[in-house]
Every structure is written in structure tokens, then in C-alpha cells.
Image (cartoon, rainbow, N blue to C red):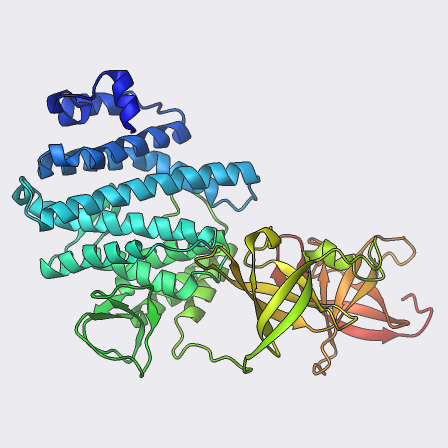
Length: 515
């Protein structure tokens, strides 16, 4: 809450006049929160938590903590509602996405900063510090949880994470470890039982294994699955060959993969997820039956068991040791690349598109490339709409044909530019007309993009197409290079926001064949 608001209220002056200095007045402020409007309620609570930190020097530490604890807990129903709305299976409008993201980001930032202020004042022995010692596990666990939420929101927009986020994380866990309270059970919020070590391990392994490689919804569900299985995570002070990630408490930076080349020192902590694999196996068996366990906490959101099973399988793959090695060497190169963003823009570059020969794609600079992918650093304004899973058409300026790829990694640098990692599906694509094999005489506006895979001798066709065209019970007719083919459906490989990638058995037909 800004100073000018206090002036209007006539409350800024004597310390005793501050509404947060009296628990009864603080409770009255909570009673006046607009409870039927989650968005406004969270805005007001964010302002009051900001005010708690701003005025903290005028309070005893136990009073600051008591008020923060009360306001933070009161915010949780509104937080869960907005998180549910934000991480929805349904796409949000840009306005709604921005509105929700901003409200949540402000709340978690103010909450985390206030928790860390309490932690810092405690470490300095502020007046009233001894009274909150029993609450240190709750303080540290809530602070780490707020940091997890901030990182999740940063990952949703591929934004740069401030260094102090990692410093605060080290502060919470470092204090808990020093006090030997990191494993103490704590009900962080009603119905949510955890410990400081569990919160810390979930954050490190979730962020280390998924940040910048998943869509916002995937990030959210993956973090929630890690939280559900957090008892299977272990933290060690000594080198662990089964360890996945390390975190340096003395020089905190984002989690790093464990490797034999690391320099060992006492401030390193090693994170092991071997026990989680058994838990994941059990969860997968339940999900395969079409059942979603009651203990899974998605803040009230409901997700289909098949969707959750896919995420659980991906999560299991991310815990594999050693991590997958790059199959093809990358080489530095400077190439100008024409880029078409999305299925329909790609289709326009083919002879079945509505605008044959269109060349309105953005121009990107490629910095390194391999046989299966490339990386570009692109100013944000030239990468509008690019997300994890975005389909991209690409054509070097010196080449006449287009290729296709999917965005697999995204991050931002200090200049605000987007680092885009693209997996190449095919270096050459062809637009093809498609018809329903069961209705050969009916004209169709269906069209696909055939992926030329010269080393593939399986007799399969890989096609990009509009969503909902693929069906396991629907065969298609395709024309390619003057020949007719029957396509027998095999599998849906990937579903994107504006495309499906599908596999078909491809059988050449005699000219004029209609059966």
C-alpha cells in the first residue's frame, strides 16, 4: 500500500495509528476484503502485505510475522482460484492472461519479500525474534513455496529470473538446515502437509528438469506432480552418483546437472529422485485405469487422467540418468532464416495454400545449427506468439524450399531477446491435398504438409495438418509428386495449438483407383 493511500486515510503519522499495528484493526481490514471478487481481493491483500514489509521496522518481529501469517493465509482461496483460471486447458485471451499473470506475480513477489524480511530480521536478532523460533519451519516453507510460484510464472513467460530469487532460496534452506528443522513436518496451509526440505527439493528438481522446455500448463502440472511425490526426493551434503541436480548454498545460481567434473565443496547440496521413480510407477498404474487420485492438488482444477498420464510419463523420462546426450554436434554459423509462425502461415508457402508464394515471414539469425535443430536469438518484437510447442516453417535465404520444426526451448537474456531452440522435423516439406477415403467423390478443403524424411524406409508418412483431422478410424487419400496414395492412420504423434502431427502407413495406388 503506497504512502499516499495512508495520507488519504489519515493513518500515516504516529506509529500507533497504523492499522497493521493492532491485530483487531488488521482483522477488520481482512473482513473488509471483497470476498466475492478474487481478483480485487488478491490485489488488496498484495497491497497490505507490501505495507507490512514497508512498516516492519516499527513493529516487533513477532507482530510482523503474526500479521503476515494472517494475511498470507487469508489470500490462499483467491490465489487458488486465479491459479486455476490461469493454468487452464482452455486458451486465454491476451488481456485475461496478462491480467491474471500480473495479479499473481505481484502477490507472490510481495509475499516472498515479506517472508524474507522476517527471516532477515530474525537472523539479526530483532526484538521479538525468540517468540517466532517455533514457527521457523512454517516461515521457511512458505517463503520457498512463494518462490516456486514466482519461478512458475516466470517460466510461463520465459522471463529472466532475478539473481536474488536464488539468494533468498539459499537463505530459507540454509537457516532451516542450521537450525536442524529442515525435515520437521509442517502444515504450510490447511490440508497441505510438507517440510522445508520437501519444498526445497521440489523447486530445485522441477525447475532444473523443466524450465524453458515446457508450456505453461505443462510446467504447472509437472510442478504439482513433483509436489505430490515429494517424499521420494532426497537432499544430500555429499556427492551422490544418483544425484540429478546440485544447488550451491554459498553462491546460489539456478540448479545444475550433476556431473563428474564438478568441484566438490561443503556448500553444495545434491538432489536424488530415485525413490520417486517407484512412486511414479504406482501413480501411472492408477492413471492408466482412468482414475485421478484424490491427493493430487491442482488448486481445485480438474484434469483428465489421460492428460495427467502423459505428463507423468514425461516426468519419469526427465529423471533418467544419465541425461540424454546430443545426438548431433552443433556448429556455430551465421545464417539468415525466413520463419513462418504456425501451421497456416506454413501452408501459405506451399502450392496448396491460399497464397502461393507468400514470403511475409520474419527474418531470424541462426547462431548454431545441427542436423536435428538450430538456435536463434531473436528480438522479442520479432518473435510474437512464439511459445514452447509452436510450429515453425523455416527457409534459409539461399534455399528455395521450406522446412518444418517445433520450438522446444525458450529463455530470455538480460537484453530481453528470446533464445529459441528448435527441433527440426524435416528440412523439406511439401503441401499436399487430402481427401476422406470413405467419401472420395466429395470435394474437401483439407490440406496437409508432408514431411520429407529421406532416411526413413519404414513406408510411413508423417503429416502436419489442422487439428481434428486425424482419427484412428479415418483413412485419407493423398496426392504427392503426381502419384496417389492411401494413408492408413497409425498414431497421433503430437498435438499443438494449431496443428496435429500424425503418422500414417502410406500405400501407393494405381491412377484412378477409388477403392
